[in-house]
Length: 345
Image (tube, rainbow, N blue to C red; front, side, top):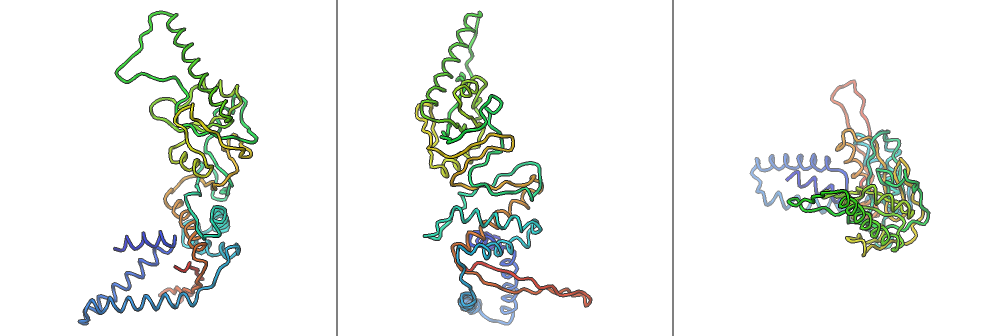
């Protein structure tokens, strides 16, 4: 029950999972004492429901309306969400990134935000201080055609390919036997013709940036197809995961193509650069570059928490300021006071 309670809190508010578990444990302990005094469980449950309604009334009376254009208040709320995380020392960098990314993809009129439009990209090397918000798409690998001279495209027209740019292969149980060099020469000519026709169809669609999904059946692209596409001035980024393809298609309003004949390229999308640090294209989606992925879960969870907290605050439009006091049992220890902010649910 406590696990499900923590999950519900994470989905609803994005933060405070530990707090609700501790609070629920204290309430259960109080229930045990009340049951020991002979009070019926139904009476206890009814009292809890009345207390919950009264607590919600008090919280709404304490809540302060927050304007969605008040960026400083949103950043303070995101900073509070990070205060108990392992990356709390970097909250001054991560909190503005979380708030700005949520504001970029939120619908102010409907007060709705879809966190699926925000993509967190992890890059090996560097520190948390190197994290940044990119208003576009970020790829973790450089362009396949950068060494062939195509590493920068202006007014990019993007096509998403879910097919192979390589020669077809036989089934597992079949094989092709070549007896002399003429058959080998014919095979190479047919392969060259096959790939060249595919590249011409891609060029005819108006595409000058091609994103190719990663394949486990055979090579998504080969050296011959990359050679032809570079001659046609088409940038190629291959081996993109299926989950990333779905995200790219959603934020760029494009439909992935399963065949070269049905490839459709998007309109002018600004600048796309295929350098060693990754390729990026300004657009609707947001990307956040991260540090080296040590202790992955402990660092990934605060990223999700700050995004959910900012998104929930954007939807609620109210904030409750509380004051929590933590005192040590030692007489010589000092009491520390910490200010906390929560989105009103």
